[in-house]
Every structure is written in structure tokens, then in C-alpha cells.
Length: 148
Image (tube, rainbow, N blue to C red; front, side):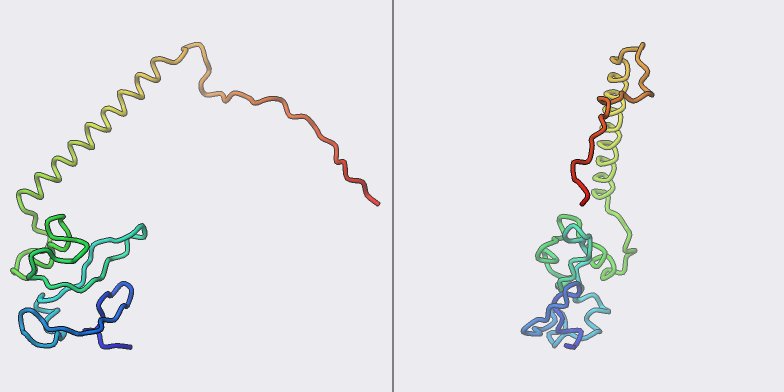
């Protein structure tokens, strides 16, 4: 098993060919670099399984993980922890984005409810909707295989 610092991706266990250096300490990365949030492993969900990405990245970089960048809202927790802030702290912009998303969900739900009401009103009131329509009558078929 390679040393933990040489592992490039914690999700897949991929090993880095070169260990490189910590951007802050200018030394070979150690556990201290992870504890001080110089380096972190991406926690963004990847793929259909939702497992974390796991790629090692420098926290004090412009973009963050190569696949999941900061400006898309991924791995912001590490920046906040590095600054000594609450990791669940949300900026005004993030709160506004969440409010917009909630409003869109509410309007979509209201539109779906109106469509359901319109469909219900368009139905024939003399029909028993709770009874399922029966399909064609089933006919019995004889087994054509003969026993010897």
C-alpha cells in the first residue's frame, strides 16, 4: 500500500507518479498539510453513484478541483475551514441562489397542480374513475404438446 500522501484520488485509490510539493510549505506533503487545509481531497459527488470525487487539490488555488471548481459551488467548505469560519456558512449570493431555486420549485409545483386540476375538470363526471376498465376477455388455450 502506498503512503497516504502519494494517493492522488481517495475514491479510486489511484497513486500519483510524483508526490510533488505542498504549495504552502514548499515541502513534500504530509498529514500536517491536510490538517492546515493546504491540500484537500474533493468531496463533490461524481457519477451516478454519488460517491465523492476524491481528487487531491490545493485549497489556496483559484479553481479548486480540476473537475469541480469553486465558482460552481464545490469544496467551498475547505476555504471556510482554512479561514477559520464555520464550514456551513453561506454567503449572501449563495442564499439568494437557494431562494431562487426554492421559488422555481414552488412555481413548478403550482403549475403542476393547476394542470392536474384542469385535467380533472375536463373529465366526464358520469364516469366511474375509481374502476379500472377491463381488457378483452381471456380465452382458454389448449396445450398442444402430447404426452408420450
